[in-house]
Length: 137
Image: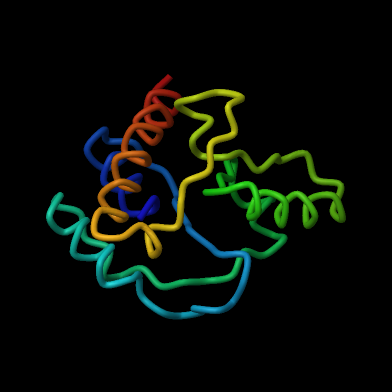
């Protein structure tokens, strides 16, 4: 969801940016987003039908200027990869864009009941607005 929301915001702000999303496990490797995420984002005018799950790789630290995680568990996974590389790029919690140092995790919308995907959209929408401001900056 974050990938689609950020891509939409960057296009509307006329910001040329490379965006990738990746997981820390290969459980859904190559699969599209959850159908509820697709539907919810389509209702906002955002199309993510082209996106497929991929695994985060160590080279991503060299490829991207910013690396964001949805929760502390994924952040720890990436910190362990980063530590082994001695790389300076630090994975940040995406919600820290809106709430610096509060270390708020984005909940997994899969378990959020009827409003889970909408709730996560609202969280990401605000934080990714902050990233757009930073990129414009």
